[in-house]
Length: 167
Length: 180
Image (cartoon, rainbow over all chains, first blue to last red):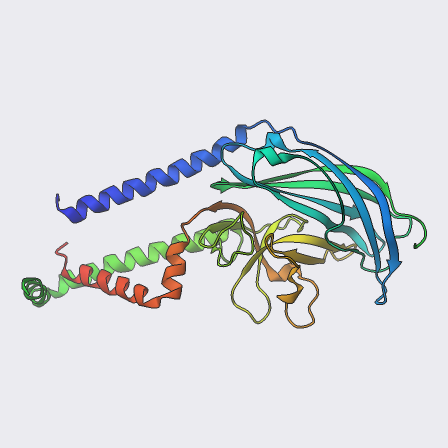
């Protein structure tokens, strides 16, 4: 009952149980953080807007993104993954979500930012429905913890519209 | 030398009843592990409720050796979710993020494009020949939580199977030679 094997086994089991418990508590503490992120997106310019050879519309935009995601960071946060998606509806598809830009924010110091870029991923429709299309730009964020449950949420900004003709 | 002599003595002195009892205890442990695994599959709704991250394509968020907890619900797949999917013809599941969603009006079917956070391009190169989109039936679950480093045990056992054999051999020997 008191051999080295038994003692090592008991110690190891206890250590693993405590570790698992601490991970669970760390993750649970994330529920109590008060999160008030804010963001604004402006479309500075429609660079071009064409129908591709295979029949799908494609548009290239320059976006101005301002955001303050500092309140999302807790002591259990490893990184925040933020991305901007365009959401719109067409006659064939009830929902289309196209990610235009994303970034990994590893520390709280980088979480308040202002960036002006053209879309990182191609904004291509399934079809040619984009002329004059109203769409929302949503800033999504995904909080990835050091251990435990991941949280995701978004801010929806509406009122954006694509031009009525190709250019 | 003394250890080998002791081992041979203890193997010789095993009675049938004791051996059967030990075999049943071992069987009980294995079956309860299996029951827990199957119960997890039911609760999370996913074919594999836990996966190990094998590649560095989602760094720095998920490193090789982390484990992910999955859940699969009837909720529609939306951009930004981290999904685990199987490509037709390949058996290794891939864990990447959804970047494009096109959902059909009437049928609710969905075309999904994924990309690893740390990859430069999207996953079209990883899909099957001629496949442009993933569909719902490819997706095995959404990642909802994670634990770092715990998956290294599985990676080591898969990539160096000799360690797996040594471990099972040692365990078997322990079972046979222990007196309780």
